[in-house]
Image (cartoon, rainbow, N blue to C red):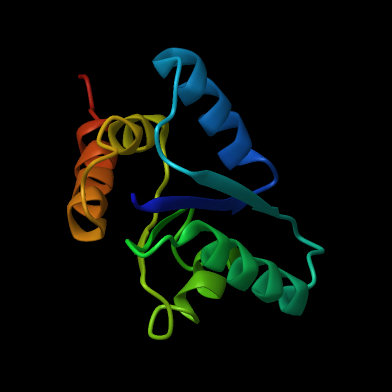
Length: 128
């Protein structure tokens, strides 16, 4: 078994990042599903879809949920499930974060969550 990955973002951002990561890595050993929201999404339908996707992805090891922006719809929706489902949520999705996650398919939910966070942070640099 392995941790499932659910990517929830605005307007196709997650699909684009995942497509780029897959191109760079050539393969993906983790089960991944992608969900996109838009400004006119029906919140109740989004919640139903999230619930279904998490249950499909969780083979017993939990699901890492990656969202693009804290305080926005993708993150707000998933946080409603945090206490009832075996998930970990990391916000601020970027390509560095996603590549780091996909490179560690054997980690447990806590460990892969930490890799996601560190990958996202380590991928941000300021050059002056």
